[in-house]
Amino acid sequence: MLRLLSIRNFVVVETLDLEFDSGFSVLTGETGAGKSILLDALALLLGDRFELRQLKPGAERAELAAAFEVADHPGIGAWLGEHDLAAGEGTLLLRRTLDAQGRSRAWINGRPATLAQLKDIGERLVDLHGQHAHQALIAADVQRSLVDAFGGFTALSRETAGAWHAWHAAVGKRDAAAQAAAASAAERDLLDANRRELAALHLSADEWASLSQTQSRLAHAAALLEAAAAAEEALSESDDALGRRLSALIAKLAASTAHDPALADVVALLEPAQIQVDEAARALRTYRQKLDLDPSELARVEERLAAVHDVARKHRVRPEALPALLADTEARLAVLAESADAPRLAARAEEAAALYRALADELSAKREFAANELETRVTETMQQLAMAGGRLEIALEPLAVPASYGVEHIEFRVASHPKQPLGPLARVASGGELSRIALAIQVVTSEIGEVPTLVFDEVDAGIGGAVAATVGRLLQSLGTRRQVLCVTHLPQVAAFADAHFRVTKRGDAETVRAEVEALGDGARIEEIARMLAGTAITAKTRAHARELLEQHRRAC
Figure 1 (tube, rainbow, N blue to C red):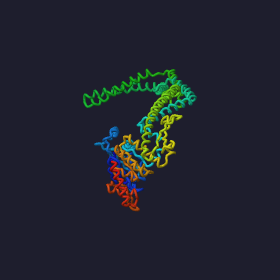
Figure 2: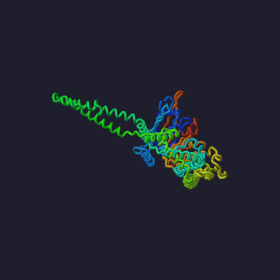
Figure 3: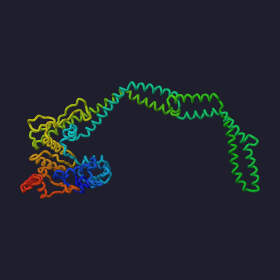
Figure 4: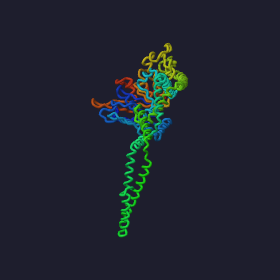
């Protein structure tokens, strides 16, 4: 549950630290004092989007922090462990900063966190019912989500939606393949002809380079032979050959070493050169013997090069790219063959449809059971909210065409008194009745949830008198099982709280700030008296306020 909320430079709050306990707590104050600002700050800590207008005027940065006690909630601890954000000693710390440039940073237990992680953990920590929750209740998707959440099969609902999208994707592929069958056939014919032509060429990845080198050698064979012969003669065959002159020079220097041994080093340097010259002469001789002057081989090679050039020119690629083009053509043919496999695509579509139908049928069965239980419990709660004889019915109407959310349309139908026929919630309920029905639904659905903290932001709007007292009693009862925070303007509701906070706005024409204080018994009487009578507080209104608090204590 929420233990501490700390706010700095947020809207009209400069500095605020609030400590909360278990049970039922209320926040009250005059209209415009900033009661809902506290809940807005909490919502930002739980992953809501930040708007620049929420930064206190003149401030460079807002900072929000909250501490939650989570030792009794193993699911939250497991989530933290999975994300390597484990809490120390059962405490979870959330922190978020917001600056004037619109940047936002967040931390969970001191470690950087994403907005998605804040939202994810926030859904496990706090269930926040906003001021306009009763208005949202008339939307079909909200009603459907309520049934799914009440039954505890939201995950099954998401899985069903995923199966629906997969089914429609498979049908789309099947139908697209059928529509493109003629075009695909023409493309396959062209690609197959290209593949046969490229395959018939039998060009390997390195053949082009080898052919080009061979053609160049054969085309210049005579010149190569002439150059090799001249080089061999200069090295070893002529009377003035380099090899012979080098041999004579070495012999003369070797003889001179008898007179000066220092020449032996020069001889040692020349002898390897003589060996290299002799080997080069022998290599040239071998090269001349092997050099091919066969014109027919040259003709064959040039014919092969011309064939490769022709195919490359036809397909508008470089000759060396032809092997890769063949591989790409074969791959595209394989894709077309698969897409043209109508029976296979139809089978896949049927398999996807069968999976969707199985999940949707399971979802329908669970929705029917959950709807019956929810409508029974909400109807019971309505009797306590000045709607005696009223009832809620949750209708599950089959859809003509299956949808991503299932095979039925869910509609909340209500009658506020015994003689009124059931009708859609949006058309039958008045504003006040809708608010009370929404509160009944919220109380019932909150009882079965696992979220430790429930926040109600003026959901008691539009009610008063005995009904308001009943609302207070319901919230107090809920507070015995969960932590409940409620922003309220009703003294009857505030009197049932275990803890009471008053929000006030102070300042002058230039500076406005909101302050919050925890109220003791005496201050609570004054605040409830103000809520009862406004500014004209009398001894009578104080007595009435004291009586409300005493009635609350007796109810405990």
